[in-house]
Structures are given as structure tokens and as C-alpha cells.
Image (cartoon, rainbow, N blue to C red; front, side, top):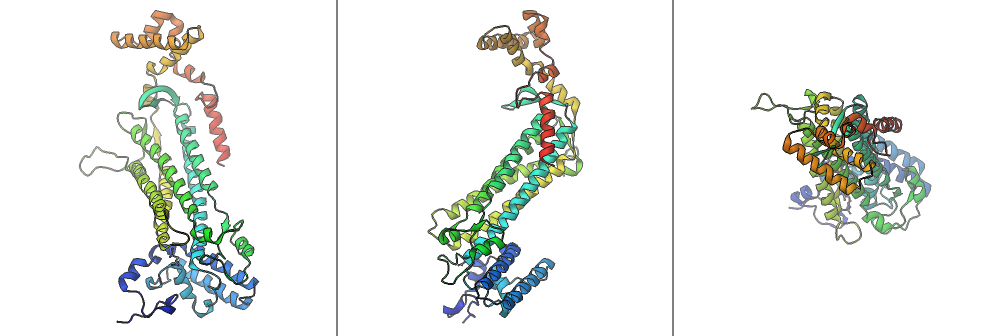
Length: 448
Ligand code: ARG
């Protein structure tokens, strides 16, 4: 059976692709999401073609109006995507009809998709930065609301030293700040349009003009790199994976803190789920899902890195496989950032439980070491001496402050005062209430 030849590139073919092949190769089912950027790219390209005399103003006007109408239809959900037209680029061009016959002059889908994707990633980066900042704000608000709550800080998940809960929360603000920076730094500022399939065009083009129209800083300088490059996709995927790692740690802290064992926080009912079997359960599924979704964010990065590995220059169809991981990471990341921010606004801190845990005198064993150091005892020796007191306290069941005061007098027992101990931690970055208050103010300023 003779199938009708493919409309866009079918000139040299006697038959169109087999049905199974169409299904296997089509990408419009997911790359339709590039439509806005495809249309923006086409409009800039059409205006560029006017500049060099390939299109008349009237022809370009028709194209632009046609593209705008298509955009409206897509947005209204009335546009009919046709899988036979393979991808978003050809769907839109086909819908443009005869007025669009000159639009593809000096352009290939290779530079077109490279441009669309860069524009898409540019928007995704902005959204990621906004969502990071919203979560940072939620963390700062929770920190401020509970600014004098003390909790044990942990290393090896063993109680280590007292810190302000706010200090712990602000640690995540630092991470998210780096994440936001990473989304900004990976900005890709060059326009590939005009690179054609691989070697530019014999037609005169105004690439500077087109680049400016699309708000790129300049055109790319090597046509082969321009169509072969997906670094900006990987830059985004890496930034998303890193952010996901941070979110999973925040999620894990919240899971621990909301357990009966810790009891530091209570997550609002709207952000927890019940058990179908055990009526008493209130599970932190949101946090668990955020933690779990980090797997996807890593997977998507590795998937595209692997797809790109060893590809000969320049464009290869393998590269069509960049989109689903990219879209999935963007969706996953935004959803995780947003749901965590919403959830944090509905988290209540149990001050009594926090303070009870932070009141464990063992958390100030290091402060007793410092007490001895101030008396001139070398640190290593002081550490050893206090270690022996801890062992004695464990053996006798006498609290550490009592054991310390028996050995070194009442001044040693006065070390075991959590607020005083915190106030003494004044070095830059340490959790004295004064420092933490200043940090809260700094972040509020930066996040305004
Ligand atoms: N759908 C393709 C992709 O996403 C567009 C570029 C196709 N170019 C080509 N020469 N087949 O990669």
C-alpha cells in the first residue's frame, strides 16, 4: 500500500512513514509545550526575513497574524494537534497554511528546536527562581514565628549541641539561595537561529536583529555547536537535581520532627494523610513524596547526559529525547517547591517538646570543655576530662552538671544554661539569638 508522502520533507520519498514509525518518531504529544516559544521564534525569524528582503512587510504581517491566531487557538484548547505532522514545529507551520510557505527560508528544525528549547528553559529558570524564593520566604516566616525555640542540633542523627530552630531552618534558606543562583547562572544568552541545519545559510541574514528580538544577548558564534548543544538543558537538569537533593533533606527533617519520637512539629491535617487500616495514623506523605521525587530529578539528569554522550556532531534525532526529562524535572521541581512552601505555612512548632529535648545537659558537654580551656587546660586534656565526667554521670545516674560541680565547683554547673550557652555563640554564622535575628532580617530584606 502506498502511503502519502510526508508533507514537509517528503519530496524524495515514494512512500510516507509506516504507521508504527509515525507513532515511534512523533514528539508532538509532548513537545507541543514549546508552542509559545516556537511561535515567538517564528515571529522573530519572519521579521528578520523582512530585514534582508526575503519577505515583504505584508507577507510577514500575514505570517505574524496567522501565528498569533494559532497561539490563541492553542491557548483556548481548540487547536488540533496532528501526530502525523510529527512535532510542534511542523504542526504550527502546517496550520499556518499557504501564507507560511516562505517562513522556513534559511531555517531548519535543528536551529528552530535549539532556539525554542532555550527560550523554554529561560522561562523555566525564572519560574524555578520564583518558587525557590517563595519557599525561602515560608522558611523565614516559620523561623521568625518561632525565633526563640531551641532544639538539639544533630550530627550522625545523635544530639550534638543546642541550636535555635530558626538557625536550622535558615540553613535551608542558604541552600535554596544557592539553588536559585544556579538557575540564574545557567542562563544561556546566545540565539541559535540562523545556524540552519548545521552550516548556516547562503542567504543573507540579520542574526543580531533576530537575537535581539528574542532577548538574547547575541547570536551563537558556531553553527555546528549551536545545533548540537544541549548544555543549557543539562544545566537546568543539574540545578533541579541539586535543588531536589536539598528538598529531600528538608523533607526528611520534617518527617523526623513530626514523628512521635521527636514531636517537634505538627504538620497541618491538609498536608498529611491517613492510613486505610490504622485510624490513629497521620502520615507525612507530602514530605515523603518530595523526598521520593528526587529520584526522578536525578534520573532525568542522567538520562539526558547519557543520551548526549558520544553523539557525533551535530544534531541527531536522539536529541529529541531531551524534552520529556526536561519537562518532567521542571514540573516535579515546581510542584515540590510549591507544596513544601504551602505546607510550611501550616506547620506548628511544639515549643515544649523542642525545649525538653534541647534541655539535655549532655548537649553542653562541649561548653564544659570550653570552661576548662578558659582556665588554661589544653583542649585535648579538657576533652578527655569531660569525657570521664560523662562516663561517671552515666554510671552513677547523677546528672552531668552535678558531677561537674562536684569536681570543678559551682561555676562549672553554671555552664549548663542553654540560653546563656546559645548567647555565647557569637562568632559569624553561629546560632546566638542576636545573629539569628540579624539573619532573619537579612533574608527578609533579600526576599522582598
Ligand atoms: N522534533 C525534533 C526534536 O525535538 C525537532 C528537530 C528535528 N530535526 C530533524 N532534522 N529531524 O529534536
